[in-house]
Amino acid sequence: MQLQFEELDGSKSCRTGKGSAVAPDQALAILKEGNSRYVASKAPSATLQSRRQALSDDGQLPLVAVLSCADSRCPVENIFSLAAGDVFVCRNAGNTVAQAEGSVVASMEYCMQNLKTQLLVVMGHTKCGALKGAVASIPAADAPEPKQDASVLENYLVALTPAAKQAKAELPRASVQEVEERAIRINVKNTMGKILEVSEPLRQMVDAGRIKVEGAIYDITTGKVEFIGGPPAPAPLSVRTGKSASVPGPEALATLKAGNARYAGGHAPAATPKGRIQALSSDGQLPMAAVLGCADSRCPVELMFGVAPGDIFVCRNAGNAIAKAEASVVASMEYCMAHLKTKLLVVLGHTKCGALNGALASIPAADAPPKANASVLEQYLVALTPAAKQARAELPRAPDAEVAELAIRINVKNTMRSILEISKSLRQQWESGDLMIEGGIYDITTGKVEFIGGPQNVGNLRSLELVEQPNLTPQSSSCCQWC
Ligand SMILES: [Zn+2]
Ligand SMILES: [Zn+2]
Image (cartoon, rainbow, N blue to C red):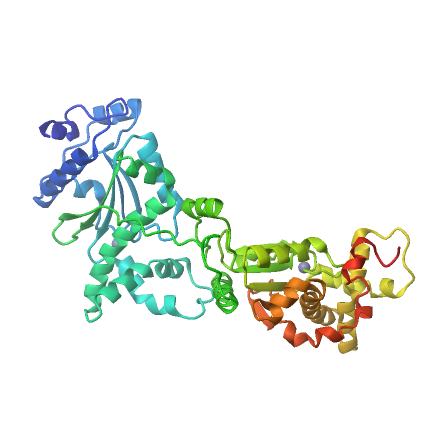
């Protein structure tokens, strides 16, 4: 170990890209010795020009990568008595990747893969303001609706609250300061775990014993670094796959509502761990809901409900309609309910829908003799006119925009009703209470989804006037009203 200090000392030769990698235990011993020199207030060596020249010519070969806090009281090189070329450093407030910060994880991948570093240290510190803020943000994290117009910092502190909550749960009767100190330790463990969860290459290198990950706490008063061991054992990834049990309709609806509140509140979606994709591939899907939404690019179904791959089965077309008994949509829904055992079906319209605006404008065409050479789109909009006509009849003196908004709601109800008219199996499942069906309206301005109830609110299905929707029956799916 003696030689290492001579290597670190700027007066001697330094480790460059031409050297060989430092083993993790050796690197850790160097950090410990360097920290004891710092604690003993020994002056660091001067950085010689020859060292800078060698590093510039031959590249770096850092002995450790450190993720530490941005706090000015935590100068990483000083704490470990290290010089240029010794340590690859990422720092942010709270030394975290709580929001799967790509810049940090990518930097660590680069260092371990390209610079051959074999030790990664996540270092928290006493009296960390970020974790103090996280403890104070627990009420905000528990609020039923995320705060509107929250700053990036506020959202970040909320993302740090899992560590704070765990600390509070472990120390129910402790002072706020004690909870904060515990949260700082838990956060270091969480960060190590999250880095390995997000980064497949780093996880593989740890599993293969090629690199080591170590947690540390820097005491800003004494200057001492306490090493606290490696990452927690990975929690089993909870992924709902074809091997799981179905999610009951009301539970699925509650999950969609909670996810939409996060989306409308401006929260970033979670990263998708590779393990989830692999599990879904090997064990199949078991979506908690099927959604028929609009093709409109402003209506991203998965994003608006904050869900991950495998969570929802999605059909989309212009106007979220089956006005012409679209077999592809109804068949998809039958498949999802029968084979994937999904218990919730959502028909989702949205404000300012171009398809329903088009249907309103197509009322004259629907009432006129059939147009020769009508495009597929024109025929489709005519098929959507029953909803537009009903809205017009209910609001005879309202402006077009208001009528269109009502038509959007009527169309969602018509679609739910038509699905049950066309599909015998879905009707049976719905009537037996095995399938829950809900209509929703997505507000493209606020991002909020309003749920408007199911087909039970749209009148007696048996008495449906098919005259109102001439193309509704499955038999008419292969032709149109003009042929
Ligand atoms: Zn800090
Ligand atoms: Zn639309």
